[in-house]
Every structure is written in C-alpha cells, then in structure tokens.
Image (cartoon, rainbow, N blue to C red; front, side, top):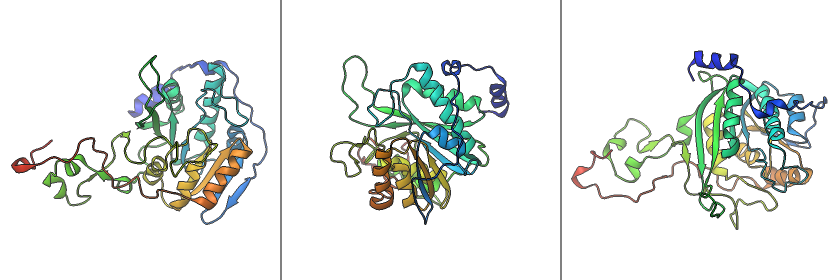
Length: 318
C-alpha cells in the first residue's frame, strides 16, 4: 500500500460488524508457561490468548506471528465455544489480532490462516491498525469436503502483513522452489543465471507434495487435533520471515505445528493454547517427537505439467 493511502486508511472511519461489541477485558496477571524448555527457548502457555497476549513479558519483541484461529464453524474443540454470533466472533477476532499487533517488534510480521468468510474482515482490521499487506497467499489443498450445494472449498487464505515493509525480515533464498522453466521446459536461460539456477521464489498459491490437509494415516497427524496444518506450510513461513534465534509466536497452538517447526530450525517460540488436554499433546510433539518433514518445503517443483520435450526451440519458451 502507498504510504499516503496507508495514512488515509488510519484516519478513515472504517466500521465492521464486530465493532458494535465491547472489547475483551483482559485478566491482569503475569502469565507463567505451563511448559518450557531451553536451547532454543520454547514456551507453551495454557489460557485465553487474549489474556496471555495482554500480559506477555515479550510484548513488542516478537519477530514473527503465525495465527490459525478457530473458524467459528462449530468444530468440537475441547472447552471452546466455536459457534458464536457473527458480531461476537468478529469482536473476538479483533481482540486477539490487537494483542498480536502489540506483541510484534517494529520489524515483525504476522501471518493469519483464515477461510473465505472472515478473510476480508481480518484484512480490513489489520489495515486500519496500520499494518501493511505484503501478500495475500492461498493454501490450496485437494480433498475438500464433498458437497453439491456449491463449489467444493479447497483453499484457505494465508494473509501476510508487517509493521514496516522496509525493515521486515525477508529471506527469499531460504524458500526457493524449482521454476517451471527448469522443471517443465528445460529452458537453458534459467540454468545460465549467476545464482539460484533453475529456482524461483514460490508463487502466492501454495500446493504440492506434502501440502495437503493432514488426515488419515499421514505421518504428521496428531490424533484428537482438529484442522492440523502441514509442516511445509509453517516451514515456508518461518524460513522466509524469521532468522535463527528469532522469537515466533502462535496464539492458537493447537497440535503444536508452529512450535515444532520453529524448534527444528533454531527459532525461539511461544505458543498459547486454551485447552490443557490439547496443550499436553502439543507439547509432546514439540519437545519429544519433533519435525517429521524438515526441509520438505524447499527445492521441489510445483509444476502442474510433466516435463516437455524442448527440441530446437529450447530457450524460446515463456
């Protein structure tokens, strides 16, 4: 967003449905992690993320946030009401987003994993709070739930915002994948580059091997957890938007994917989970089981066509 447009939005009277509800009043107390291990510092707090975020000793020092909140789809999470009114759910969303914004460092970034029905509200709230959109990515997966009443949902939005686009942490070389020019066409021009031969920064629609929904007998699956995100998704975000020993926060720890991937790549991390039962299982994964598919997000091809014969026209493909 252009800087003048960013200022105009900050001064605009942008109103959303959730604004009609009173904000959450956070409990004032210094939170103690329910689980913690060093080298690197890895913590898991049990409680309401809005309360923990408001009292977190690391406020203003978090380098990267990844949030995969409840979608309000009436999923049977342990001890959580996932069937709020629309106004209540939007207010809940704005409250935890505000807590995350306050936790971010001046160079920090936030990613929000959110479906169609709330993506616009999240975007508008982050913009009116002064954050800048870097990318609106899409996580595309096969095997969406079958239905006949509309097209089958096969994506979730991955919204990437930062506080300062000129100072954000960005490591494109850490997440390169094979380009179509190399993997399909054998185009010699991409192999003649001075660096990163045959490679490119991933596009903003994410799919491919290991990128599907975690279900069935998938080796990453944690039984008893809802809507588990694949490790490759978190690996791409963490490698691209943080450095070793940076601090990463997940306000909805769930199965522990963020903490697991962060620890595998030498990042410090904070997780928050409202359910003690879920937190216990997540901690086992983070501290004992570890990452199953380390480095599986990099170097692959996401081409949707098989390799083609180039013949004499190699180098002229587009």
